[in-house]
Each structure stands twice: as structure tokens, then as C-alpha cells.
Amino acid sequence: MKDFKDKVLVVTGGSSGIGKAIAQEGALRGMKIVINGITKEHVEAAEAELKEMGAEVVSQLADISKLENVQALFDLTMEKFGRVDMLVNNAGVAVSGPIWEIPVQDIHWITEVNLMSHLYGMHIFIPQMIRQGTEAVIVNTASTAGLMTSGNAIMYHTTKHADLAASESCYLALKQRGLERIQVHCLVPAFVQTLIHKSDDRRPERYAINDDPYYQGQEFKSGYIRSERQVVSSMPIDYVGKCVFTAVEDQKFYIYTHPESQVVAGARVQNMVNGLNPQ
Image 1 (tube, helix red, strand yellow):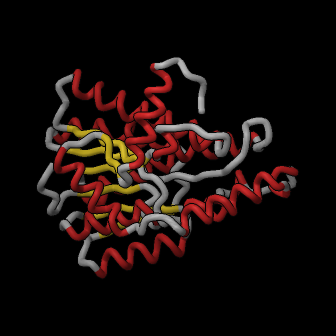
Image 2 (image 1 turned 135 degrees about the vertical axis):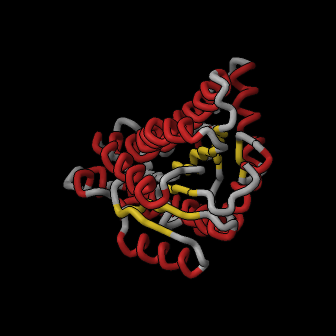
């Protein structure tokens, strides 16, 4: 896709961070925007900013990890604009810790936001893209964490690996069925100045921090400090939106914000080919 003017862009987690940057780039290109977010002040501020840029905007305040809210986002898009041309499944959260320590509720929460909401989005929006019979785009925000592993943030790595696999599989499924006019891309950023280190501020009530000892322990606290330092000192957010749209124009499946991510991926694959243990 190269012509974006008057096309409809839907972004989950679009009220801050990478999602907001993509929505802003879409507005600069004359797109009509639908954003989803879970924090009221962020959603209202993002909608106001996009309107100031001249975009026609509608927003949804909802927990996108629930299937019914993804359906409601689709219904809102159809009611307001009658079509969808570009879907960005961007919503994501992170919590650090080994699998034997993190609370089970966090296993569910991270999986539902980082993976299930993206699967729901493709499941619900792609049939409309097929019906339209026009060019359409799907961008799933994974992470360089989906190209590697580490001893921290096991659920973040797990869901981002799965999101990358889902994106690749969807790309192939569309191609094999002659639906190549629907492009699929996977965004694999490294550290960018977002609010990912403040994921706990966006916990839905059903996954609120409780009296589980983990939330008072050193692992949880050090994970937050480590994440904050990495994010605050990372790449400014402004570049990401243009990076995404340039990749879409060039039909590049993998969208890298940091060249070093490719080095990380290459080293890991080579280790696997050589039969080496995880490093």
C-alpha cells in the first residue's frame, strides 16, 4: 500500500507509545483514525492531538484483551467509517520474573494482551478486508524479545515469539489463498521511549495487584527498575511511525527499528542450527 489518504487506520493501544506514534503518522498521511486505549486520560489526550493534526478520529476506551471489546472496536469502525484499510494490533504489557515466581494471573494477563488481542483482531477484521476486495494492511507489534530469549520476563518473550509466529503464519495463509492484496507485517522494535515499564498502571481490575508475595518481592521491584532504565535511555518514539509506514510501502514483512535486532536474530538462529544450548 502506498496511497493512504482517506484510508481507515485502526490502532489498538493507540493512545500512547508506539501505537500513538503510528496513529500520528497515519494522520500526517491523511488517514481516518480509530484508536483504542485503556487509560481514559491517555485516550482523550491522543484523540485531541490527532484532531488538532486535522484527522477525523474516533476512540474506544476498553480492555482490548477481551474478545467482546475487539468486536466492539470493529463495530465502531464500521459504524463510523464503513471500512478498514489498516489494522495495527499494538497493545502490549510486560512484567518481569521467572515462570515459577510470577502469579498465575500475570500469565493470563500478559498472554491475553500481547497475543490473544492480536489474534482476535486478525480473526475479526480480516474477513472485512477480504469482503472489501481492496488493498489492506495488518501490522502486529511484536518485539526484539520475540527474536531472542533471556532469563528475565519469560512471559514477555513467550508472547512475543508467539505473536511473530502468528504473523508469519497469517502472511503465508493469505498468500497461499490468493489474498496477497492483504499485507501482513510484524513490527519488532527494541527499546523505544514508551510507557511499557509502567504496564501496571494499565492493569484491568480483574488483574489488579493483590496480596501475592511476588508483588512485594525483589524480583518484581528490580524488574521494574531495570525496565525503566532501559526504556528511559532508549530511542525516541518519533521515528517509529515513519519506520512502520515506510516498511508497509516497501512491503517488508519484518519492520526493524534497530539494526542490532537483526544481529540478535541471526546469532540465535545460528546457535540453533549449530545445536548449541541457549545463551
